[in-house]
Amino acid sequence: MYRRLLIAAIIISGLGYLFALADENMMMRWIFKPGTIILMILLAATIRNVSKPYKNLIIIGLFLSAIGDCFLLLSGKQWFTFGLVAFLFAHLAYVAAFVTRWRFSRYHLLALIPIAAYSFLLLNRLHTDILVGGNAGLWIPVLIYVVVISIMIWSAVISRSWIAVTGAILFFMSDSLLAWNMFVTSISWAGYGVMISYYLAQFLLTKSIERSKKNVIAYENYSSIR
Image (cartoon, rainbow, N blue to C red; front, side):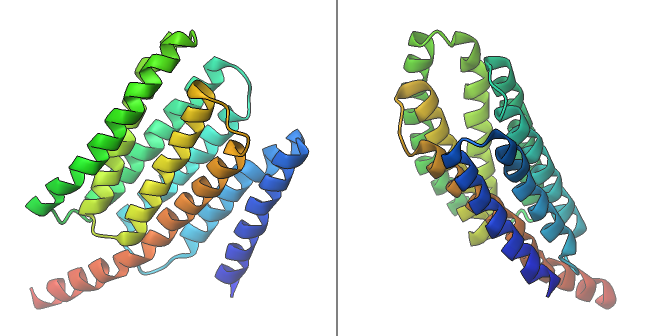
């Protein structure tokens, strides 16, 4: 019952941020933007009988994301960079989580083709516009960030969780829209598109914790046989 209430609270909080964004209410944005992620952390904490390493790493990723959200609410290139770094470490936490479910197959190498192609095309355009826009100092952080989030998507593929893969892809789409709106061309609906895809991504990554029940059961059965 309490989990359903948490999910309802997450939806209400996420919608609250969208309304605060439309109303340009900064106080409400400070409450709802990181608050929605904190509610997801609470939801993750209520999931029982799952792989603790995976669960804890996802929670760490969510916590770092909440910190990144706060930095991005502040104006200035330095705060954007801090937010970028916070999300960079969040993605590394997600990569570490997916590695705990590592089930590699040589066929997974094929997934690198669309991931690398999209990342290359995005970086190629961002490189030009970042330099032309006088933001040369942000190019290396953006480059590293795109590489890491690409690795995150591939790691999700290898974990063989469609929920995690969908969440990772949505995260990249959200960040791509954010970067495009910031460095390439202004998009009127970008703020809403970024946050809707971002919240969906984080929610799916949170829900992906539940899949690890099978790993726990399999390990316990193996241990009992031994």
